[in-house]
Image (cartoon, rainbow over all chains, first blue to last red):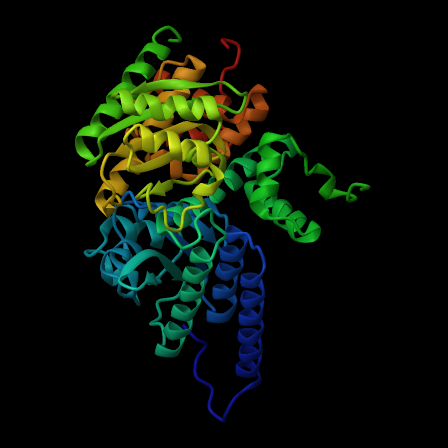
Length: 258
Length: 227
């Protein structure tokens, strides 16, 4: 899903992309060494997919170990997009990808209406024309999928697909490296912890949206900004908002005196 | 609508424990309630050893279930004699008491929906060995069902199981966003807000996801005067 090929050697655009790529991997590597927040990391990763691959939207879904896929991060909080992710519990490329452990590509959703009648028409109505689903793989097991959407009917280039798979692999590492009560990894624990984080963040968004009369997107932005600004974990902050009635209203104006 | 909530919740919890013992290759199962307000107690146990496991943790304030509730994630001790990578040294008295009662493996699953922590489901076996992937998956499903049953038991709402008996709505983002909104609108805790959504879904014959969508879209405010 790259821009059209430009003859005459590496253009400024390609150089820019390479710099962006290096920056992204440095950012991700930095995130992984600290006691990071998994939703924040995956959120950055989804945003990086959009920037680096030039797609319209990106999202990460995790297998909840009970046969369902749950959205854990998304490049946009737009309801329509979230619904498309959720819809894939019934049918769609991400479901197929997680089941088979292999990449699933549709260069033109219009041509795949028979394959996924519900998903294709819903996604097209939301303005998307092509989709790529890549597995989050841990050895033989698939723990989720990275979903990329484009508003053009385009086939992902092999290079872009490799890059996207590398980003998906970073997501897998991030999920498995979370600090845990067990000394070695237990997959169910990691997945449940990540999914719980997302649930708490959604609850906090609702609290802030209602209290401050803002949209869910704005509520999420204020949470994210505050967490990064104050160097606290997104999930911890969300927990405080939901449980201790901590209000972020001041974010619209001045930060609080501490 | 409030009347039969607790009874139904207790029945469901018992049924869930029995199903776990029958289907998950474990010797027994028990459920304890642990709420944020400090309320705690044994809800049910399938046999004497299970009851002993729950009692031990209640008395000692430590153990696999306590750890699971605290951390919000499952704690699996596949073999009490060789706990391997689980940090069991944090609960020595529990380990000793459980082993003396004939427990060889214990699996504690937190009962929670997002930040709502309501308790734990404890499974035990008199032989060592871990749960298979299929058993673990079934245990997590049982824990979901038990969490809802306990919420109902704890708050006295009759539970609208009209939809999403498989707990699917638990992972739908808008349901959680709506819970947060209702919490502010009605001035209740997040778990009460979630139950209000379910109760409204039940009363109107719609799905929780549908109700949540309308709340988030600001087309619906839940009536709060009857609370």
